[in-house]
Image 1 (tube, one colour):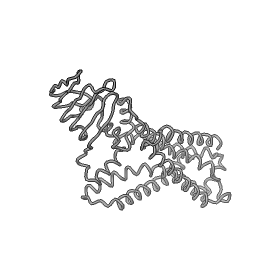
Image 2 (cartoon, helix red, strand yellow):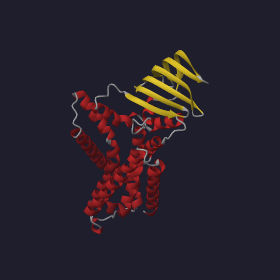
Image 3 (cartoon, rainbow, N blue to C red):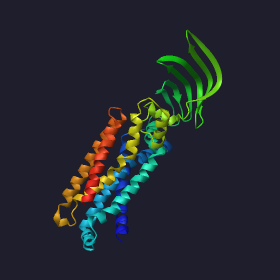
Image 4 (cartoon, rainbow, N blue to C red):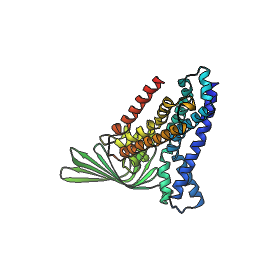
Length: 338
């Protein structure tokens, strides 16, 4: 009975606040974007922005939905009634915690798909580059290989150059006019392979060769720093494929996607610790104002830390994992004291 009542109440408040925040975010972004697009592209742009807005709307919806639900329960004396039936504060907290954790987990799973790239898709539409889906002048390093790609498309590329070194000396240059990714490796066409032997260069023309196994186009795009975030599935692929290079931005993308969303359940535990069961025992307006302000401030700090981590100005473990670990420890400690 208790769980069903709280699930229904919380879900209702969460949906109202979640939709309000997401719609507000989408409209504000659209109004300040100054874009001139066709009706179809405008709708597609709004769709991408609204889904990307989940990153803000879900945690704030869960936290503010908790505050709204608790305020309603306090004002209607339902919280007092539940206590009189023998339910402790922890009993009342558990449905909120379970619901918020499930919603957060669903969001994390969704973030492992192409939804992670909706922000980039929206930016591509603004620049009228969505249909071309091309990235130019990519330069990446993988072990003893330096790879330059003139133009990268969804599953193909033009002007692929691979420079292979041995003991800091250039040993081989592989050039291809065009290439195609078959899901496992890149097949290079019209290849010219030049090997540097002693004091001479031996060049060979090859119709096609397969190389760069596991180098997904999206992974190449992120490692070359043209994308800010990567789905954690592609991020794990990047870790498997690339060696001996700085993958801080890839790890930062994983930490941001998997750990930062759990800020909401932790914040809910802290809110419950400070709540009183009766409106006569504390000022509801002051409590709501302080809680909302603290939530926005803390989220702002996490947002700054995310920007630092993805811009390679800080160690991802220190900038993301450490603050989230501290929050988790604080949340666990408070949960045991409730």
